[in-house]
Length: 173
Image (spheres, rainbow, N blue to C red):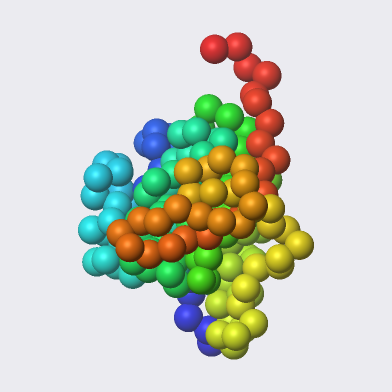
């Protein structure tokens, strides 16, 4: 039997985190390895529990969270789903030699589909685990649209790819 995908949930607010945990906890092949309420503790918890997947908050849907750059540089095997609580937007990030992202449906089903996709990819041999290149458009490290060139962080060059299809919520604020 394949090992379960290990998931650390660090989304805000608490209600969103609890919804994600309850959604994923019943999914076959998924093991919730922890929750983090404070974003400043995320990097330490990732080092402690070595998750396959991290779910974080997406505060600005037009920009990749800085935490993604830091974590994917230090843990390139990590997959990250960023979920916006104020917008209808969720984004899947991963790194190979580049940091990639792909838009996922901002719903329970969208997150489950992404997790199932990650489970399938983890079961493939290392050389064929990449996400479909046709799903990508290129963005810079700061999240601005650009060709596939990148910024430099800590002496390492990063290229980022992403596909954004986030829609503003029609709710009044």
